[in-house]
Image (cartoon, rainbow, N blue to C red; front, side, top):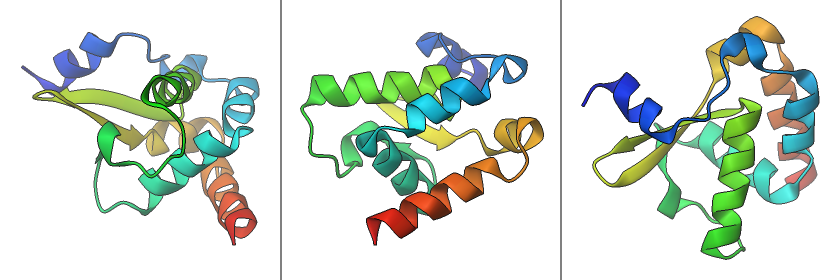
Length: 112
C-alpha cells in the first residue's frame, strides 16, 4: 500500500487549501489536544496512537485525534495496524506562517 493509499484509508483530512484558522484554534483550545500536538512535536518521528500519554478513555482519545485530523493540524496514516500521527507542518506553515510554532511554544509555557 502506498503512503497516499494509507492516508486515503482514513479519509477525512482537509485539503491544505481548506484548512482554516477558526478550526485550528478551536481544535487547539482543548488541553488534551494541545498535549497531543506537543507530544507529536517533541517526538523523533511519527507517533502511533497507542503511545500518547493522555488521561482520557480510548474512545475519547479517538474523538480528540479526529478533531485534530479534521482541523488540519495532524495527518494520520496506517503502518500495518498502527495508526500513525504527524503534524502537517508544511501545509500549516504555508497557510499561516509561524502559527504552529507559536501555538506549540505557548502550550509548552502553559504546561510548565
